Length: 281
Image 1: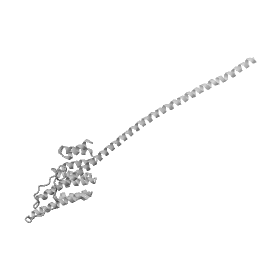
Image 2 (image 1 turned 60 degrees about the vertical axis):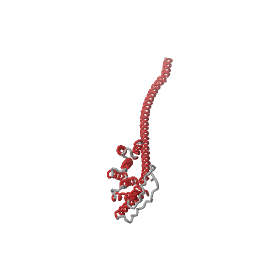
Image 3 (image 1 turned 45 degrees about the vertical axis):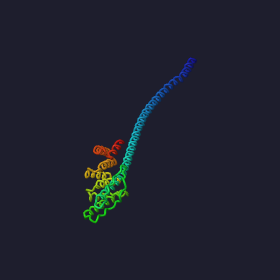
Image 4 (image 1 turned 180 degrees about the vertical axis):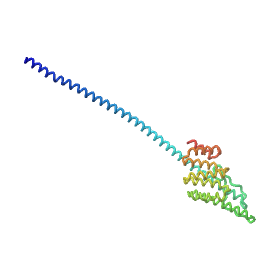
């Protein structure tokens, strides 16, 4: 019996660690399963975060692309504005030269048409823009002994009128735009019927544009169109209105003005300029 009891006790003691080992394995498996579950949860969370980050990166990329497009648009608009300014400055130089020749020719014609002037034919303007032939000196005509007072008064009036115009034009050439505006405004009020009045009104608008007072420039050029609808300065006035409207950021109004210029004055130089501007917009 003692041997049997010892054998049973020994067998129980041997079996006890095996049961403990079985218990430890189950606990370990449970812990491993719990760890795997946590790992799976963490992995899902990471995947969700990665998806969110990818979406954000894509959105930021689109925003950056949109910003770059806007910058390109701004650069193109700025370049167009610079082209407009360069075209305007070129136009102004050509007009200035042409106006000087026209004014000189007009002055000569008036002098030659007054009593006491020589009987030579008026000088013409060559295709290149310069007066053809030699020009006689521009000076007030001296009335002959038999000439009456009205002729002398007319010559004096012409000289005074021309001097007033030239004085304002000199102010513009010197860059004294406020003084030029005052001079040309006074000229238009004093000599509204003068052949030079449309040019004077045109220079008022140009001087205001040079001062970046675009709204005033538009108003002055429109006044020219209204007061002198048959003047050769009307196409140039419309072109300058379109330029000022563009500078104010009103591209639609500028385009309408250019189209109106082309429709009403298709053969003018200003219309050719208008076509060039519409082509680059």
